[in-house]
Length: 98
Image 1 (cartoon, rainbow, N blue to C red):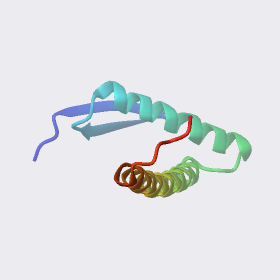
Image 2: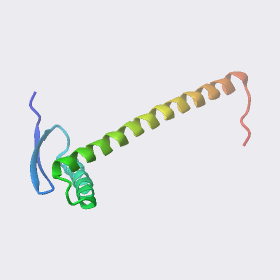
Image 3: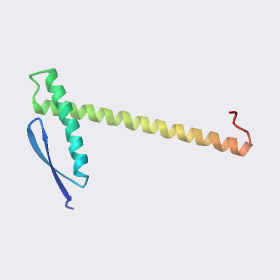
Image 4: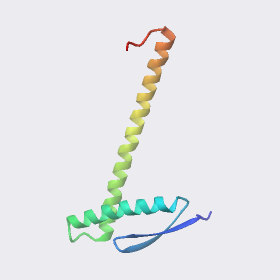
């Protein structure tokens, strides 16, 4: 399967050609976000290489992703709990106080 778009992005002065089916502007925004993260990491320690900064940024993003997944699961459980409560109210004919 061939991906329809090739988007050129620059991160820390390095060019990357990203093949994707995503909107090119979206990919560029992601690259800009990654650029900011890498530069902040490198600014915190002048001896940090691009590769190390990129790996640290990836770990940060993976951690953020896992935290968001946990939040989504928790919200799903809360929605189910609320749905069950609403069904109970409907079947018992109770009125919700204002």
